[in-house]
Image (tube, rainbow, N blue to C red; front, side, top):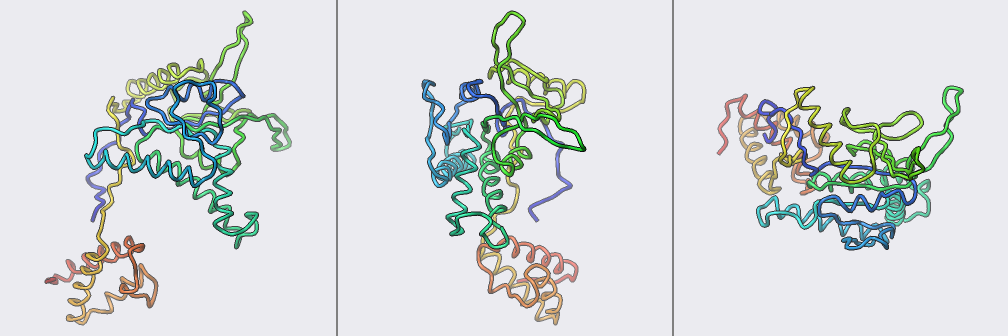
Length: 338
C-alpha cells in the first residue's frame, strides 16, 4: 500500500516562496503587474496585455484557453524533468496569470466549445458551470503542485451588499464569482492594492492583507500585517516576519529550504501488471472455492456485475483498490499466490 499514515512526519513551514500562491487584485495602475514580475524568475502568462511599459519581462500572450494549456503543459514538463534528476532547476520559478478575469472568460469559452453550446445554461443539467469551475481549478492547482510560486492578478470593483437588512459597500475582485471561489480556496494570500494620499499630499501604493466585510483580503498566516507598502520587497519581508513569529510564538518548525508540500506519494502502477496480479489472486481464490469473496470486492469498487477484464488504463486507481483488498484477503486466509 503506497500510503502509510503511521509514518507521517509533522509539517514544516518554509520561508521559500516555492509552492506559495498569491491573489493580488486592485485599482488600475496600482502596481500589480510591475510588482509581480519582481518575484523570482517569473513568466507572465498574459491574458491581458498590461506589460507594454515593463522592460525585460518574459511574457507569453494568451488569446485562447488552448494556449494557456500549452503553457501549463510545458511548465509541468520542466518541473518533472527536475524531479526526475534530468536538470537542476526549472527555467521559471514564478507563474504570473494576468488577469484572472480574462483567464476565466477564456476557460468558459473553451468549455462552451467542448460542449457545443452557446450558453452554459444549455448544457445537460447545466453541468457546464461545474465543468468550467473544475477546469479553472485544475489549471491553477497543477501549477502550484508542480512547485511554482503562483501570482494571480485581477482588477477591483466596489459593489453594494444587502445583508440582514443592512446595506454596505464591499471592495472585491472583478473575476467571475465561480473563479473567485476557486482562487480563494487555493491561494495563501489575497491582497488588495490601491493608492493612498498621506498627510503631506504624497501618493503611495499600499497593499491590504487583512479583510473585513467591506474588503476581500486575507492570509493563511495570522501574523501578516493588515497593510504594507506595495512593493515586492515589503511583501516578501512581511511574509518572512510572519513566519518567524509562527516559529517564535507558536512553536512552528521552520526551514529556509523549499518543501514539496504537494509531492505525489501515490503509487505509480502499471495497468497490465495490476490486472495480471489480480488475475493470479482470482485463480487462487477460485481454486479454494472463494470466488464469492472475490466478487464481493470487485462489486464494491466496480459496481455489481462489472468485470476486471472490461476495465481500461483510465481505471487503474479502481484496480489498485481491488488489488489492495485482495492482498488483505490473501493474508487473512493464509493463501500462497504463485
